[in-house]
Image (cartoon, rainbow, N blue to C red):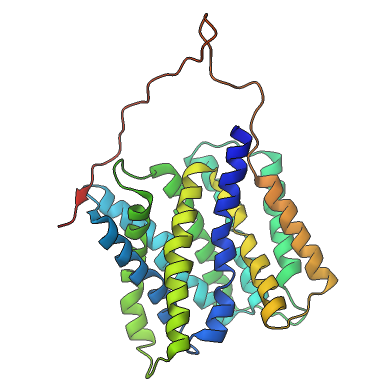
Length: 316
């Protein structure tokens, strides 16, 4: 049963990076050109405000700054650095730089979560980087110091956010959608002034643009991040991070189906390598490690420890 639960949680969580892999297609085909910060802001802030309106729950005490930190790391800073890297680097190089994120998660999990570094975990990180490189790199790909630096900082930001989300959990009484709304709102508020100062607002918006923004906000943010943070709660931090390798796989598949892009044997090899990396990172149920039993043969269940989580307040 435990193995089935792990498989189900992994299958559901991977839907988030698969959805994020469609961002490139939606951006190029539906959104106004050269508006990456606007896309990031409208992806995060409206979805966060919708979730806050539904849950009507605000943080309290230490969860104000925790929500702000997580929203900055997982949403605001990450999306900004991601777009900086995308503008300064070819797509393949940007994807390869960001692929170091699971390795950073592996190290931070050992330091902050006291998780043991297994050989299979290290192999999964290495194979994932190789696979993304084969999948995305092109012969003419070049390097740019600003782009590489932004990509590395973006990977550190998201990796730190994943590990801190795992370490802090969420306060009792605050549902998953509410917790997601806190982070999306915090990240969107961080992006808003940067967008207004750096890009401003477009002169006109048509129906295709509205459809693209709605998809990124409702599906790419509201639903996808809720699924992602659920996975962070239920799965090891490294597993969740390695599942993110599914994003370039989805981008490649969508480009092939909708944009007529061709796939080389090297790219197909990279895709297979990424799948192997994800399989290595999946947790496995341990045999013979059930609950301790009493003399009568019944499972002995210990009462749950008292919660140390902060209380929450309900918005008026």
